[in-house]
Image (cartoon, rainbow, N blue to C red):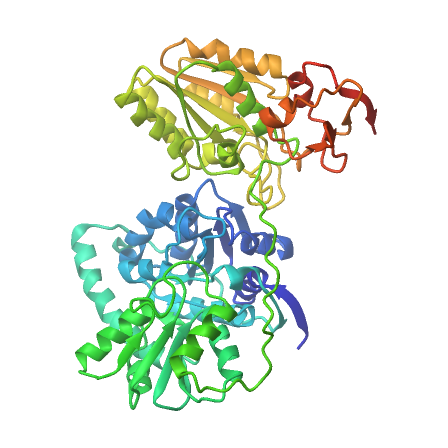
Length: 599
């Protein structure tokens, strides 16, 4: 068998393809995005792949495929599971026929998310099995197990890689494809129509299945015990790798429990607890394994001290690291524990702080600037949303006052208006987020006759997660060209009071567009249309005429463009970063920006 260097997300995708997945749906979100993209990249045409408009739609499409007996996979990040939770909760009661795996990438840190939520809790809440891989290599083979268990119990399962599993790379042995069966097709039956009586009957079955899963997972090869001693360490996910590395460098022995699933493998855990005085639990994000061990000790009257997040021995937020785990284990095993290999004592230098900022030439900067200039002196509130444009909250723009979740900017603005009707409420939303969950918010505002201004920032892509297509681009993940869904036409059909469009890089026209709606009533919509610089890069780069530059720094203080910097007492444009968007031309009152252009 050949080996291949794979990112964890690539390993998950290729593992699912090896397992015979037929339908893959999802919505882009770091750290999960590359899973679906890898399937699309290696697809020979036998797998249907789509970026859905949101996670709820993605899950429902995949559920339909599983109803017909196909193996399906859904991809999303942890906050996306909140969007998909409505159908998923019911789906466990209805059940499926083909294996269905929902890949939910958790983001400890959080590195690129609003929350640090732990999908294992959702699995317990929804009464679903959760598979928790610790390495890319394990993820590659474990996802086939997830499909098998899904089909065995006739229910969807969750697959929970965390950021370091998703984005680390490893040499993975590529195995032969698993022989699959052809989907049997959808068979009409009352089982697919959820009614209260059916839900009650299925709840009983679900509880019985959970007990069976406890026994099943106690014998699952990826849940196991190793080592011996009076002290034990329990770990799961990538934290297990950190623990294993730390223990190899220490002379003191200890017993180790690896947990890769929920429902919790209780029989295996009881075997692990035998003869132990105390246990240290190391996991990300929440004390899931820790709570299970505490419960077992209580039920079986075991006098074992369980230490972890709840006792303060492990930090309760952020990622675990090799260093933090090593330190915790050293404290747990005792000061006399010898280190068997040399461990560097010098701490590496801290990385420079690099605050997130809108790219040079980003059309969102121009859009924010136009609104800011047009609303000078007015009492306005700017509600934001999830996307690149959330970075509009930073100085010097200061144009995002609220940010909650996908699509919430429009509805939060409505709530603010109800309390303070004399203030002007703007709601910024991107094109992909508009299709994701923005449309219902506009409908709500029109229906309830709310005075707000919705600013749709259409940059022709889902930029923050890597330029994925959406219904407004006319492209699909299957490589086909579809009819573009016009944002203007959709908004027009919703009966808003006024719609204006402008190119934000035309600063005069953009500001005029804002002025055209400020004094109107009802739901007004501004559509700023200009492509992301990664979709369409400019050709011209501007320079500063140092003879005309007065060093006033207005260009820097108003725009915050990373391409403009100070060179002594004069402004300078970094040719490497400049994209030639030109909004700086309108800011400089001395005509110092422009001059010759570089092709």
